[in-house]
Image 1: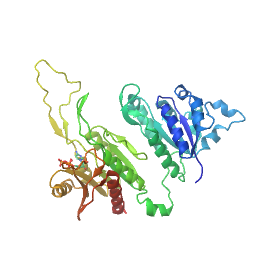
Image 2 (image 1 turned 120 degrees about the horizontal axis):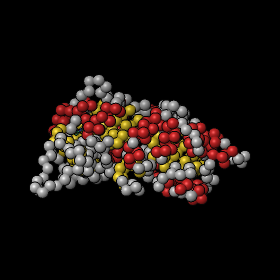
Image 3 (image 1 turned 60 degrees about the vertical axis):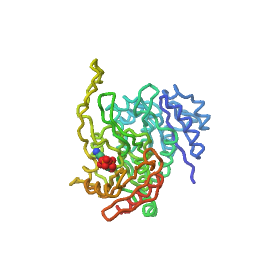
Image 4 (image 1 turned 120 degrees about the vertical axis):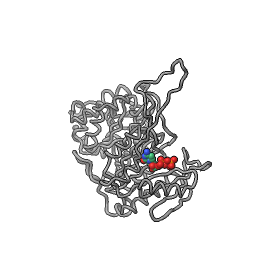
Length: 420
Ligand code: CTP
């Protein structure tokens, strides 16, 4: 195996401490690190700890590179196989999207001809700001890849998306990108997947295909602080997205607020309500296949309050009125224009599994239904295993009890066959 090297740009943020673990883990996998510490990054981790773990000198200022003993910034920016920015702050990404080069990190990012992986980390409001989202879109269109951010409690005390992906998740994304290193990096568009013919035939049957996967629960607001949701963990949806990715598909992963983190190497579109999920699916079309694994709330609150509901002296409970949510599976299945070639839905049933799920397949108009037996004692919800029956137009096939990742791999294999 040839030596692999990552140019690691460490931005300023509390998440920078996690990068020390990442450097250590990269070393254990035989991946060398050329560290670059921004001025803000140096507020959180010291050059000494970074260089001790990386076993390399830390580059931290543009003028250093004009010294005779140092490489020039062009050379440095191209000396590695992959450029990783972690944490990628809102500021660093804004500079990158605008093509600014006013310090070492931004100069390297503008000068590089290598692929770039960003691990964003910032406050939830900064992440959700239109300016940041616009920059993310620009960066993606320019060919940058993202890992995270994750959702959770943040150092600033808020909750939501913005937390940097865990080192293990970043490591997986790095290894994937290094493995696909034969791909040429393009300065303006994502590189087309170019794989050896043998890989396309044997291992990457979904190369060049686009699949939309929905996953996780939806949250339907009652008022700005309360919502109605369900216990879906998103485990099966994440596993399906990962399995499709492994077969070479480009995956648009539309996920509600799920407990299971999205897999690396897929395009993550985070949504909260069923309406947002439908819009995200529509925006992700066209696709070759769609797998609807989300547990979409069937109803939303019609009279959701614009401000927090308060108790009053009467002791009366508020009367919530419900209205039906769009059925995303039925909507995609019944598209007359731009319907994916294969639409797969899920059905969770406690009784008459086959009859109920077959009726659901016909009613919604999808091609396949993966029927889950969620009866008492099956442990499907929140568990690691699943017992499913694949229902198609031509018949039913009961699969033995399997781990969710095995169900996902088998289903992805079937999807690849159907699209071939
Ligand atoms: N689905 C959807 N949009 C909805 C509701 C469900 O896309 N508003 C999809 C789910 O992602 C899943 C399938 O439809 O693929 C499940 O259908 P649903 O009618 O909700 O069935 P169950 O969850 O099995 O529940 P029930 O039969 O009780 O309605």
